[in-house]
Amino acid sequence: MVNRIKIARIEKNLTQKDLASRVNVTRQTIGLIEAGKYNPSLKLCIDIARTLDKTLDELFWEREQ
Amino acid sequence: MNKFKKMLRITEHDDERVQALEYRSYAEAGFLIAVLSALDVIIRGLVLSHPLSEWGMSLFILIIYIIYVGARQITMRITKDDLLEENEKKKNRAEEVSALLGIALFVIWRKVILKESLIPSGLLNWIENIGVFIVIFIVTYGMTYLFRNKKQSEI
Image (tube, rainbow over all chains, first blue to last red; front, side, top):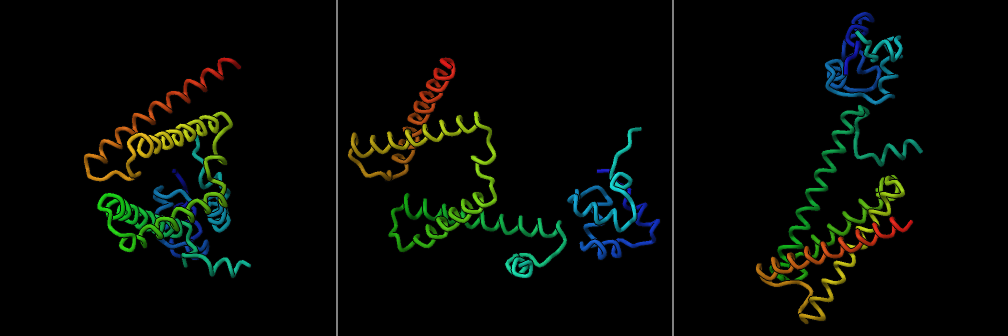
């Protein structure tokens, strides 16, 4: 799954650990989500989007080229 | 209530990914124990005919596992009856009927015709009985399949 969490996180000046503690998961989970190796639940997607002040579309929607 | 629910959880993590992996590891361990118990029951109980006191605990564990899994599937609404469509349910029921019919015919064959005990003894006898059971099952399944098709074409 393509996502722009890493860019949004860096824009917000957060480390993976910061983001992880804010959404109540481990740093490894954030790393896996950013690498596209774990599909988070909708609840976690919403928590991440809220924390990064983005919409779900901005973070997860794959735009057509 | 939430605190009570939290106490009953078998995981201490809040991370959904870690939770899912933990639950999976517990489920795999439970399944492994059930398989080992089943093997113990089959080998020591049925094939080698050892006394019940030797393999009784395995049988008990296996029964508890089956009851627990069955009960959880009912409460979580993931049984076949919950998931299948109406036509699929009918097909499933027909398969169950043919399996039960097969078992009944097998029991009649062993007890009434051969006048032997229900559990085969010795490897050859086991192989022979499994073969017979497969033949009986194919016949009963074929009959229920034909019966269903005939009924559907009449409708």
